[in-house]
Length: 90
Image 1 (tube, rainbow, N blue to C red):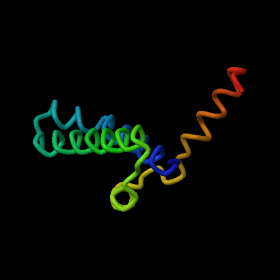
Image 2 (tube, rainbow, N blue to C red; image 1 turned 60 degrees about the horizontal axis):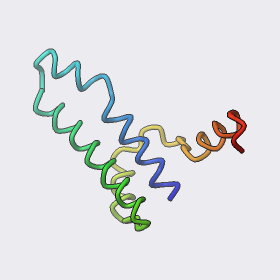
Image 3 (cartoon, rainbow, N blue to C red; image 1 turned 45 degrees about the horizontal axis):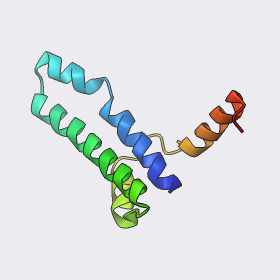
Image 4 (cartoon, one colour; image 1 turned 180 degrees about the vertical axis):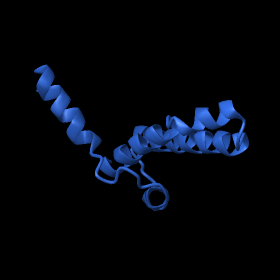
């Protein structure tokens, strides 16, 4: 589950990258930028649904991670737990 959570975070970061709106606004490679935003949003949605169903497609996840493994040290679970500690919830 941790690997899925981390890749979901990467997909959100990639979908929100400032490059895509800039490319769209300037009119250069608009189709490519649209394609990439949709790709990352769709991947996030896939991972999210898998996590809700408790059934992670590990082969697909590994393939996605190998293609876009920016922020390889990201650890969302650790961040979440630390946030809860700081809030006094844990």
